[in-house]
Length: 235
Image 1: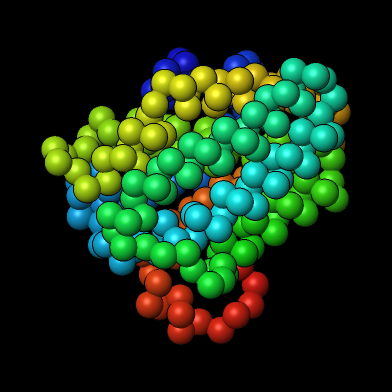
Image 2: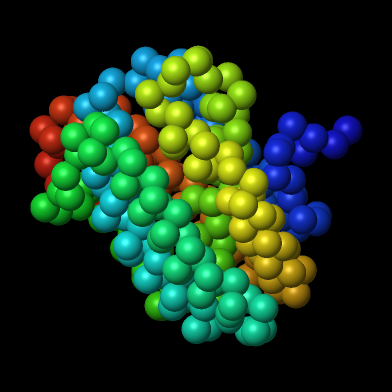
C-alpha cells in the first residue's frame, strides 16, 4: 500500500519517503493543528493570526539568510542556483503575502522576536553555519513541504469568504508547488549519497524543524499564556 497517495507533493524517492514517514507524527500534527483548522473554517481568533503574521515577518528575513548561506555551501551549480532563488523568491513570495495581510489585520512590525521564533531562526542559522550542507537542506525543507501540504488541505476544506484566503492561495499555488518539488528532489539526492550517520543527522534536522513549525502555531494560539511564561529553553 502506498502511504504517500494522500500527499499532494509526494516524496521524490525512497529516501525522502522515509524522511516524511519517520516524521509523520510531527507533520500530521502540523497539518491538522487547531491553528490550521481555525484558518480552514474561519474561526481562528484574529489575535492569534496577528501574532503569527508579526512573527512570520521576522522569521522570513532570517530564513532567507539561512538559504543564502546554504546556497554558498551547495555542491552543485543547480542546487546553488535553486537556493539562491529561494533566498530571493521565497522572501518575495512572503512579502507579497504580508503586503496584503498585514494592513488587513492591522499588524505592524514587532519590536522583537517571540521565544519560538527566536529559537527556530537561531536553529536554522546555526545549522546553516555550523553543521553540514545536507543538514541545512533538511532543516529548511519542512517549512516548505509541510506548508504546501497544509495549504492544500486547508483550501480543500475551507469555508467560503474565508478571511485567511490569501494565505491559502499562497501556499496552494502551483508555482509554490514547483519550488517544493525541486527542493524535495535535492534532498532525495543528498540522502541517496549520504552515509547512514549523515542520514540520521538529516532526519534529526528535519524533525527539529517540524517541532518548531508546530510550536510556531501553538504559540500563536496561546499568546496570553506564553507571555506569562519565564524565558528559558524551548522544549
